[in-house]
Amino acid sequence: MPVDDPAAATATATAPSAEPAGARGADRGGLPPPARRRRGTGAGTWCAIAFLTLLAVAALTAPLLPLQDPERVDTDALAAGFSSGHWLGTDALGRDVLARTVYGARVSLVVAVGATAVGAAVGTLLGMIAGLGRGWTQAVVMRATDVLLAFPALVLALAVIGAVGPSTLSVTLVIGLLFVPGFVRVVRAPVMSLSQREFVLACRAMGMSTPKLMAREILPNVTAIVVTYAVTMFGIGVMVEGALGFLGVSVPPPSPTWGGMISEGRQVLADHPMVSLTPTLVLVLVVLCANVIGDRLSSLLDIRGAML
Image (cartoon, rainbow, N blue to C red; front, top):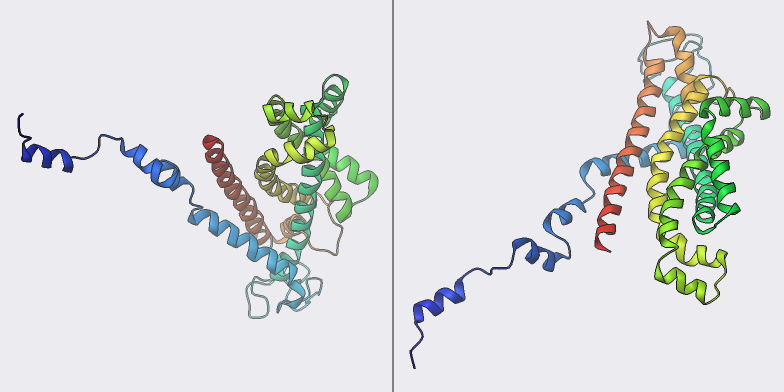
């Protein structure tokens, strides 16, 4: 019998494996290297989270912070610039811009969070009903959604708030109502797909009621989609509340709102632009941060979907 060549045996033992590099990385980490890199949150996302957290903490603890009374009028500093007493200056009535911006965050964040919660709760429920229902149930929900979408959102908000009167509760409910159709459409599509899956059909065959089926089987599978969409709608809620405040139909004075501050700053815009620029910059940053976080959540959701 021929004797094996020792050199050939050594070369064979030390030769690299023919297995693709991507497959080796997938075996070690559960995901291919590019996917593993995408799972990191990223510096931009952490900066967005930090800014929103800092703003929320400042708004909640505003009475404890060394800020001036946002409603106090300083007659010696009408539309004044930067100073040791007023770090960002004052508006046309002598009210501190920094204090009003921080206190205005309380209104904007409360309205945006409340409106998003209302839209998510109602829209998710109706979306699941429309996705699981057939016949008149689905038709009624979708036609009501189409009717709401047919109205110009800002005109509808102005009409309803003008009828019931401006307040934090009315503004929150109206903006939440405007968010419902979007949540219905976002939830309905995956629910229709889930309704034909084996585990849902098995639950129906065992006689599980529709409410229990939605709570136990459907809702956990659409929660990630709802949360991702809700983060984006939170930013839109801040923007809508600012638009209503600019038009004078948001939370009435003397409570400061970012939209109201932007509108009031037009009187001294040429000489003291920071009166309007400060709330505008904060509003833009909040919307930008919400979009960044929403986009990152959407990316992570796509990765999880690819693993199923």
